[in-house]
Image 1 (cartoon, rainbow, N blue to C red):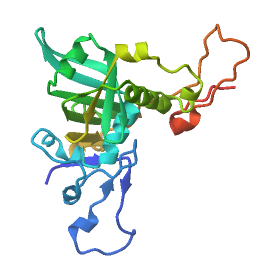
Image 2 (spheres, rainbow, N blue to C red):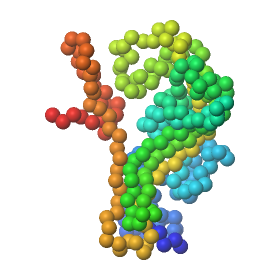
Image 3 (cartoon, one colour):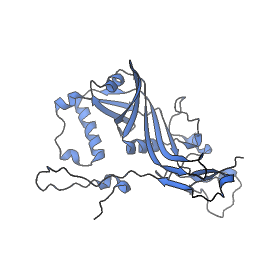
Image 4 (cartoon, helix red, strand yellow):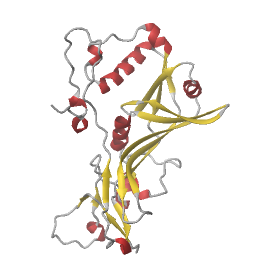
Length: 270
């Protein structure tokens, strides 16, 4: 038995307080991720995985942080908006951050046709994408056990090219609608010249893994009585308020996109 003590900040107990259980599994609390409210996997639940396991997606280090729910993969991608994409060319390996968005179980990126990344990916090169959300610092009673809360996803595969301009237009507008619902009904949409200059690539999410660290402070039992504060220093990404351009024409009403961001929306102080 390890002498470590996990001081989790949120737990879901799967049975009523005071009830009696014979099985040890009944006595295991199920940790909840504070940032997406999912139940983190326990060993007896992993057989119900929704993400397909492959040699590349198997999480071996800190396997208790693995989450197998496709919905959590989608949430991380949707909130991240940035994919770090790996390629290798004549100059060597490189990882480039790119705007990315999801529709169903696919991720899309766009860029200039002559960019190094786009040319490598459209050739069918195998690649790896990562999405990361930093949720806070874990402040322990020892220097060694300081850590971080995060949500991350890794995707493996190959990109395919979206050739038809009509489909490119639809998918690019889908991205705008995710950012600012209703905006494509107000702005000038892309013309043929702009669509021809834009490469749109898609990759499926069939081979992916998710890792969530949200277990709280992990102190040695010998440090528990040490007179030092321990806990979580949360990080939160907020959205808004809107900042208009100075050359705004006339009295144009400011749009309201707050409903698209829920509790992440930051309203200016009045």
